[in-house]
Amino acid sequence: MTMDRHIPDWLDVSRETIEKLGYYVAEVLRWNATINLVSKSSVAEIWQRHVLDSAQLFPLAESQGKWVDLGAGAGFPGIVIAIMGARQMVLVESDQRKATFLREIVRQLSLPVIVFAKRIDAIESLAAETVSARALASLTDLLGHVTPHLALGGRAIFPKGRGFEEELKLAQADWTFDATKIPSRTDPEAAVLIIENIRRR
Image (cartoon, rainbow, N blue to C red; front, side):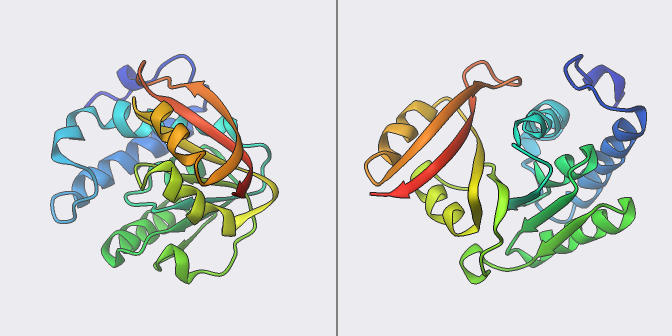
């Protein structure tokens, strides 16, 4: 897999960062043989479907404060964001095998990341400036997971597929919030939702 052909112009990062991302991808594929980190159907498009889809979130954070990724899975977007330069990343992943993989990548790449191998509702408030979750739950459920871990004035960042407008409508039945819709760089029918000022109705 030639790395350079996967790097679009908008991904403005150093050669060292690209090399770290390439190492991480290789490790995901190696571990995927024994642990289901990513679906087999997405392996051939891992850069587009997972790495770049994660990388587009990096400039959307309000600050360089603490960033928490819920349901971290294989580390998309959390590990990608940490490689790109997040200063404080916390990954929450209840699957012990996936958490072991995440800790190993963190060790090998010397990333500023803490991994909690616990359920989201079993963790005390993390008071993060940014909280993300990718392919974890519906927006209505995500807001319930996220609000205990957001600092005052913090923002949630959710990459969402083609049904994002319907998810927004359904979530508004239970929550009030401000939503900004950013067109996805990796899927013309998808969007990244930035959610702020979240309150339960």
